[in-house]
Amino acid sequence: MTDELIARAVEILRRGGLVAFPTETVYGLGADAENELAVRRIFAVKGRPATHPLIVHLPGAPALGAWASRVPEEAQALAKAFWPGPLTLVLPRTGRASDAVTGGQETVALRVPAHPLALELLHAFGGGLAAPSANRFGGVSPTTAGHVRADLGDEVDLILDGGPCAVGVESTIVDLASEEPAILRPGGVPREELERVLRRPLPVRGAGAVRVPGTRESHYAPRAGLVVAPLAELARRARALAAQGKRVAVMSPSRGELPGTIAHFQVPADPAGFARALYATLREIDQAGFEVIVAPEPPPEGVGLAVRDRLARASAPRRLY
Ligand code: TXA
Ligand code: MG
Image 1 (cartoon, protein in one colour):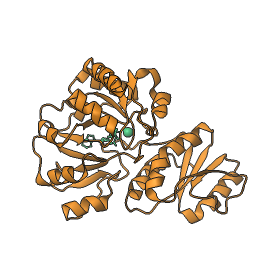
Image 2 (cartoon, rainbow, N blue to C red; image 1 turned 90 degrees about the vertical axis):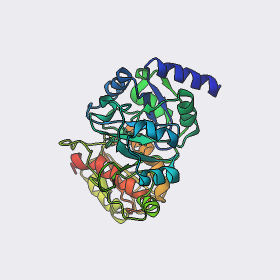
Image 3 (cartoon, rainbow, N blue to C red; image 1 turned 180 degrees about the vertical axis):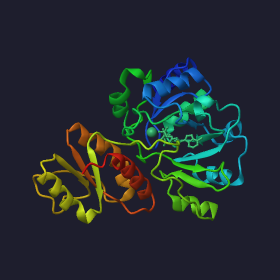
Image 4 (cartoon, rainbow, N blue to C red; image 1 turned 90 degrees about the horizontal axis):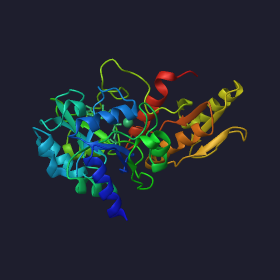
């Protein structure tokens, strides 16, 4: 059954089609990274500006050399420690990575995802798969096949269903092409773990900003407004918003002092659990038609740093309250 599906997916990809597939972080919208027309279709379907480069997904670290012209020792060490896993390495590109994939940059983003279906697909396909998150540009990333269907529906040729994503936030992106290595996007692999392997501090560069000059639009954002506050202040903020007549939903580990008249959506208290539930809960609250979401800010440690980053990007440009 799975073999047949994978064979169909490979056939679609070879023809230049689009296949959505599960990864451990979020669902990806995949195309043959070496087929420029297919890659352009990704941008069209997502409504994504062509200047936002894509991550190329590989079946294993040995494929690195085909896509990166220089693989420094630190890249080898990180690949060895965290692949397959939620880590993306930005390295100088070879000719295999076209301008369509890299947005004209001289670097390429590479990752080996840790999901059995994704790895099966990548091994069967044999090449690199360019894949952004399988949602409309700027919106909340999909963590189930149902989310992908709801966002992109018939515009995808095939959706592989691998169940809910285990990590729930995107990969950590590490820039190893510049003089000074840095985290470009906090994600599934905690900063502390990267620093342990590299044995040096790894700064977060441009956190909260999309890495394209001049663009600061909202990202990872639900339709509803989002207010982020310390856990102890959630109930007070929610009551104040409700008093203004807003339809408010609170997303937190427990109801606490929240009045029964205010909607509550439970998320796990531990950062990893919060990360896993984050996007699905934002979607659920949107579906239910709330105007404002009040969410707690996790401590900036472990995967909590990625959750903070996504909440900040989802709330920042449209902070109306
Ligand atoms: O977990 C993930 O990374 C997911 C799954 C599907 O693998 N993918 C994902 O892709 O989040 P996307 O397209 O939504 O985000 C990719 C990010 C973008 O912010 C893009 O700017 C950055 O990667 N990126 C890609 N190539 C880059 C490069 N050469 N230099 C710097 N940033 C790059
Ligand atoms: Mg995305």
